[in-house]
Structures are given as C-alpha cells and as structure tokens.
Image 1: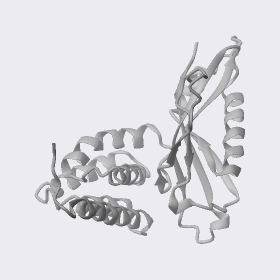
Image 2 (image 1 turned 30 degrees about the vertical axis):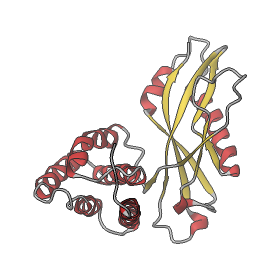
Image 3 (image 1 turned 90 degrees about the vertical axis):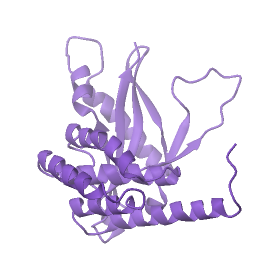
Length: 247
C-alpha cells in the first residue's frame, strides 16, 4: 500500500492544475502549430530533458510529411490528448508522448476534415440506469461543453464525422433496403442540433438504417475557431466517430 506524506496530494493537485492551465494557454495562443508542439514538449522536460530535441526533430519531419495543414491537425490532436492526461493526473513525459505520437499522426492523416480548429474534450456525466430495465447496447452518458466553451453563444453548429469515407462506403448502394448515407446523416445532424439547445450531447447516438438495424456514432470532441473575436459569430463543430452497425 502506497503511503503519501501529508501535503503530497495537495502538491500533486496543484501540479496538475498548473499543467492544465499551461496546456490551455498554449492552445489559445497565436503561435504556429509546430511552436505549440515544442511548447507541449517543454512541459514534459521536467521528467526527461535530453530526449526533447530529438523527439521534436522527429515530430517536425513527420508533421511536414502530413501535407497541407498537417501540422495544425497534429498539434490540435496532441493538445487535446495531453489535456486529458492532466485531467486524469497522468504525468506528461517524453515516453508517453513518444508512445502516443503515432496515433496522433494517424488521426491527423486519416481525418483531414477534423482537428482543423482548436479541439476540446467534452465533460462526461454518467446517467442513472434503472436496474429493472434492460441494459443498453451502448453506455448511457451525456457530454457537456468544457469550461472554455460554456455558454456557447455562436449562431452556427456543424456536425463532423470521423471515418467519413468508411461510413459513406457502407451506405452507398442503391440496390439494398438500407437507408442512404446522407439520409442517416440528416437524422444524426438533427438530433445533435436539438441537443445543442439543451447544452448536453449523447455520448452515443444510434440511427436506424434498416428495420431492426442501427448505425452507432460515438462522441469524439468539440472544435471551435477561437481566432474569431466575436463569440456570437463563432461556429461550434461537434465531432462524432462512426463506430459500426448492428445486424
């Protein structure tokens, strides 16, 4: 059993609070994407300074290989992930960054229509489940806007979908009784827009694509272009991930 000295937990909480504040300052700054990545690496040098420069050099070359705006997508994806780590009190180390960077590169490369704007994780709230009711196929949770986006007053909301190509390919045939892809997206968009009014989004949304068959969409994150100074003209991008379909 680990024994913590008095005051240790307070110091740990203060460390992660300060780390969160610094990560959010980096996201909101006007620095270039590659400078933001360097800033994030600088936060991890308390654990491992000597590997910072080689890792930054490696990431710079890989971000360049992603093509137009690849560095922007990578930086947004990275910042959102390390923010989650800080919230969960997971230390920010060079090792953890090195292990995760391949997934950030993959997401930035495969989803070129997302991570284009500052990206934010949602705040998850578990809903009470009646023990007498049948357990749902997917978890019953809702997602709220994070503190930085609370009280969003912008007039626009755009639904984005991860793995859009696979989703479109699944529902492209005109010779089946499946609903077409954009008909499914129309219903998904309508439901997300309705949830925006309440300020809470479903962590999972199912849309019927045939009698007894459902397409599942999992909440991923929010995006907002914070460079627009007037908040009423900002657009909220709500990103869902196409998961799979039930037979």
